Image 1: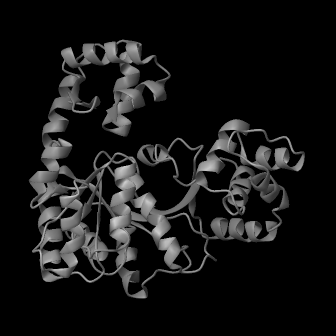
Image 2: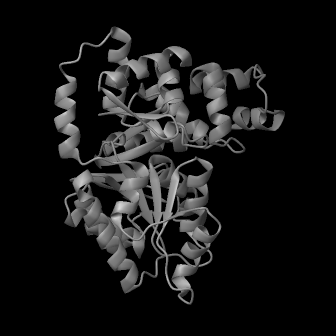
Length: 367
């Protein structure tokens, strides 16, 4: 992605009345952010759900100096910028309708890691909560998942610490720009995370630390993840927002149950009662529902697959699943521009040859 297009994407990100969903519609229609601004200038935008107010907001945008300053900050600090047009834009987040059109990354992290889960919860973590976070992550370590959370007090930072303890990659999704770490107390932890994982934010370095920003980042936490685990939560809280978002994305949600009288178990218990989350009391519950396989078994079978002769179309499916991990039939068909019927036929043949495995919900993965 050229710096010029990043410049206009940054500008589009800050246009009043243009959210992520509308921005994506505009980008799909015109092909670039620069062309969006050019079209608005000449009043040549005619797209469903893109009204006059939005067009006028694009045309009236004038904060170009701030965009220049952000570009200078990105270049000076060598910050990686990932846009919706980039091949390494996370596949799971790409399918979240309100995922960001661009974001910034620090560290050493694969955002298309095979197994990705988020672990979130109350800032007022109890000893029970700490115990459950430790037990879950230790039980999952053989599957080498990427652990995502928000680097906040409580469950978030405990998840990052336990991931670091077991040498698992861990990603902190921030509610502010890279100019600071909030809370300041977690700065050293954030530095350690850069070695095996990293930090991600959609916010500019000048954006303030604001409550609404932290709520907004929750959609990225849910969107990046195969599943979200709520360890402890009161009746209200940001982790419940993350659970709702994950459900809206058709992602799995787990909740750790607690005693009915415990304040910070009420949110989890309610999620379970309302059938918005599956009960998790041990790591195996997550493994069973998500149908994970230990990496040692996976790698052994992957070697056997090398001796199978694949057609060119089958090879494309193999390469896609090897890069992206578990995908649905529709996702494979859309990505490779194959008809669904052809994709289903190819997958059936690959399954018969012991190359792929079919899972519940028309999901497929390499054996």
